[in-house]
Length: 240
Image (cartoon, rainbow, N blue to C red):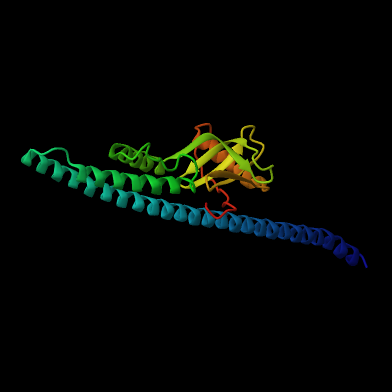
């Protein structure tokens, strides 16, 4: 009769240990599930950023191709000018109007194309020649090539989506190639930016994570924060 209570007394700590182990295993499972979900979200963000980077590189390659073709046209015009100039010197005649005409036409066509392209790109992406001269065209191409390889932040004024027509908002504009993001000067609002027919449209983002990522990217570009990977949102307008 004295053995039964002793047996029950020994079972009590065993049951308590089993319950504690079950609770620990449940917590471990929850922690593993949470870590796996976090890793999946991070992987999706990395994949989206890589896809965006690939699309940016493709856009830059396309614009660089246009500029190279324009440079080739100008090189042909310059070669023709030099040939006619030598012919002029050999013959001792007046000026070389034919060569000058070819150069002016080529430079003028390039300027027209660059003016049209500038209406669809963020400020500072493409530099338009100041006139139809060959010198202005060459300088504009050089400055545009330099701008395509830079990530810049500048103060710009744009129309924030939802504001009255004609209203302008001053923002810090982050530009990487043909892509752009912005934050208002007090840092309370951020979003994506696109150029539409020469107007800078600012689309606010409602996602706290996206706003923080944009602010952090601008701070990094301005040298106010250490460099680190960021995940920037896509533009609502499709470009970026």
